Image (tube, rainbow, N blue to C red; front, side, top):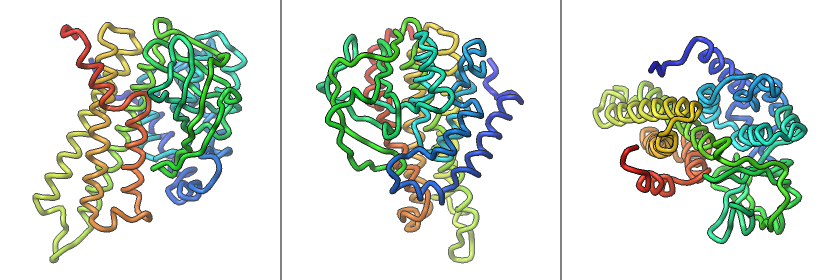
Length: 341
């Protein structure tokens, strides 16, 4: 199996990277930290026009017609650029609406008129078969729906059904975090995992964003090691630094390969799709957290400052770790899978 990107896929990556670098540079991202919503309305509309929210949706249903592999490559770029906004839950929400036959809801999401937040259940919550309890809600400010997903199925819930909403400070200034209570709401759309594995697709896409973080911090560290001079020599000549950078490169490469293979596996509904997607989240999370931490160490004191991007990547990695199940949760899934996988 050839896991290298094709020319067409590379064109998608290049276009996405150029757009994000121009529209959401770090200076503009920092300007959003005090805003009510993490969504930049103009950028969001442009992303919809580029077809990002329907990249993996069939052309017959109003999408672009690519697969999960292309979506994963896009999300790697979103991770590299620390793009703020509910991209993960919106892309998944569009797929839920399409699979459920809710054409009006799907059109609103795909066209950028209805962003979708992400609701993660707390210990007292239930998501299948009924949705009830307390939830942590990411980037639902200004959103029309929230996505509630688990290995059994996925639902789109109207934000009007969120009760007792309370804003909570988030470690990542680019993410809006709230707590809310839900009591068996009417769902705008629902799709079982047997029909469309939304949880697994989301796991792969969250892992892809973590890969982007691991690669961005790898590059930040290696570039700094080339230009930071101590005792008349770049710090990169020292084994303590070059070995760190080499390890970062190996982690990123392993995570990218696993995510790309998992994307193909889930798209083709292979028997080992759960194993591959879960392994991708674990490997990518480890790579992102380790690389982001090492990047700060390579930069020394400046890496800890708010003015530098190194700490921002570490914060985003911790948030993505909790999206659709953290490392502990996914390691538990791996441990419970039959040994044949």
